[in-house]
Length: 292
Ligand code: R5P
Image 1 (cartoon, rainbow, N blue to C red):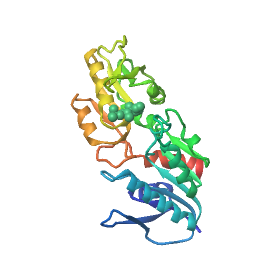
Image 2: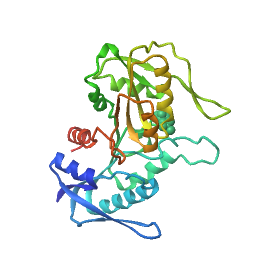
Image 3: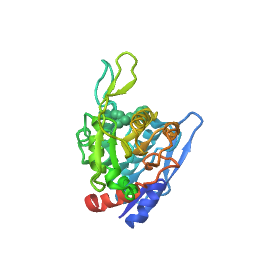
């Protein structure tokens, strides 16, 4: 029995880096929206490493049902299934905020782990609950901020400041600065109870002539990063750059481009044309050091 990396193009690239056979998945979508992911062949498998990326414009629920069917199928023919989901959806619904709501992030973990032995994701939104708290199987949340900071190694440290948009981003700033030990600043964010709009508390940090790199886990509408960038620019920063892991909406990217950033670094946890950091490299390293 052999090991296989199973899935899409990310799986193919990962199989090459690990020196493990690749097992392709073919997909069909029926007129009623049903999805049929099919393994190209059905060998007996020792360890299956399943990696599947949510494609551009693909509905997240359609993606999830495909992932569930694939993991169940692999469980039937493999000794062990290692599931890699580069972006973990529903992570922000990690509590009951209004009566009657589901704790979606926990429920999803409970469904996924029925067919997995190990779960791996990247920079899941761990504001209240950690990925390892959601799953009862070994579950890992790999951070990509250190790898993203390598794209800024040409920045002059005394002139650089790494900025987090809110308290939760402090961890991202610290990880980013591990190999780029520049100044750091973290904004305080609050939501206006009347309008629902986010607001940033006044900052006395001196941004004048600084090269600011704003780091965050997710770019969705782009409003968070844009607002922080506008404040910093107004305070006299020389340049603004962005580094974020998950690009959810490319329209959000257009929004932050309106400030003419010096550099934008993101990853391919979700399919997009703009990524600079290919996640298969850090994933391969993590698997070699911790799992395989
Ligand atoms: C919030 O806590 C997250 O870390 C991101 O800052 C947020 O999800 C970004 O969303 P948007 O791009 O819509 O402002």
